Image (tube, rainbow, N blue to C red; front, side, top):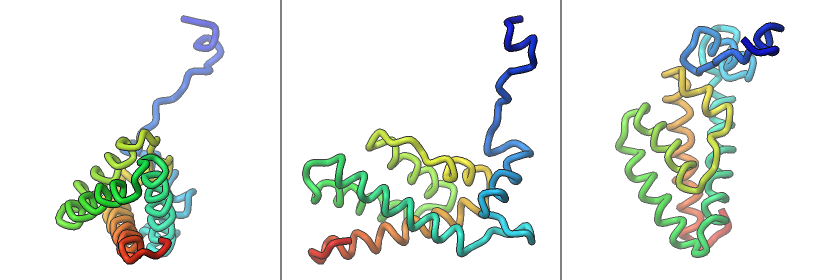
Length: 139
């Protein structure tokens, strides 16, 4: 036993799938006092993170058209996927540009209702951004 263990300073292992995860997403405001997902908050969060990832792709790839083509493929596949698979595809998009998954998104992964709402909002917003971008506008 090391000194930190003797003092009780061990790190607790946490996961979005453990019993305390619901408390975390409630403190983030993603679950309302009723116990149901706060749809407005989730939609806002999905829009923010979709916009940020869109910009991350445009910054990562030298050719903006290349970035948009990759994201169009993602949107096309994600629209056909079930919520869980759609969410996994979102996570993989972060990996593509060597970005860490934002903490709120990580914590959402443990709640099927949040996954469904967030992933639908994220993909919907990404599709909007790509439509604006393909029209020559600034998304």
